[in-house]
Length: 376
Image (tube, rainbow, N blue to C red; front, side):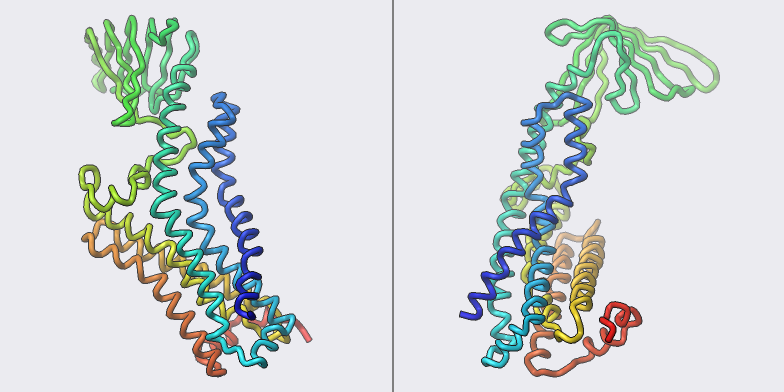
């Protein structure tokens, strides 16, 4: 019954913490999507749909952090209310106390696995499709006759007229920064084509002339019947194009048509190891939250913050080690959650033996530790 009560107490702060962390993490994306409504006239429904497609990415990051915050906050409250003391007096050992916490961490891990293995790639794929659909409808709208258009990277476009079927007439296109090697193109007519498979834009010009200059001061022209400018499709929200994130997990395992083996293995291991952090954090945060009521709660919160930072450093370092390496080197991504989990098990065993080990001694003798301790 005590374990069940502890498990149920973890749920409300976890939901609240996940909501707050996800909201904070999504603020930058929300700002960029709102800018689409203001600057490009994108419908509100499309913007909300794009935000929904990005939600799995945010959750895959916030769930492990929410686990740390939840376990520490709940156990600190139980410690200050002397409920942990009462549980210990009733014969509940730290290992028994770890069962509901580990179960909670395992359930969140399974949830996060579902997000990273299925929902996140599906969300990215749907997000790219929605972006391409908006790109198809918005690009033609942003080109207005008699107005300079700077939507194409490094180019400025001007058209005299546009027909109802979006055919352009009287086209002028030039580099935004004029250099001795710049090129200016004039065309009587043209059309914008969006290629879905290549995810790029073709500006197809017909019956025109290109004007060239060179550093020696020379000048020449070239007439053409048909010429194409190729542009990478701009990301409407300002993010980079990350195609591998939108590949389903099964395609990531089986297909090698578009991505190298190293890239596929690295992405696959990332999708597996990120959720495992939830279970590792639950084990590591257990003893952090078991504080002496007389010592205050600040130390526990500082240790929780240090745990998150240390994991991020280990994760970033292991991720860098996998770049440009053999496919099997991607297994190094398992090191951070394994180390954090083993450290948590070690701390639980120390608490079970009621022995203050070297890690606690080091923490008590940190220079800034006394700054957060309550004054008597």
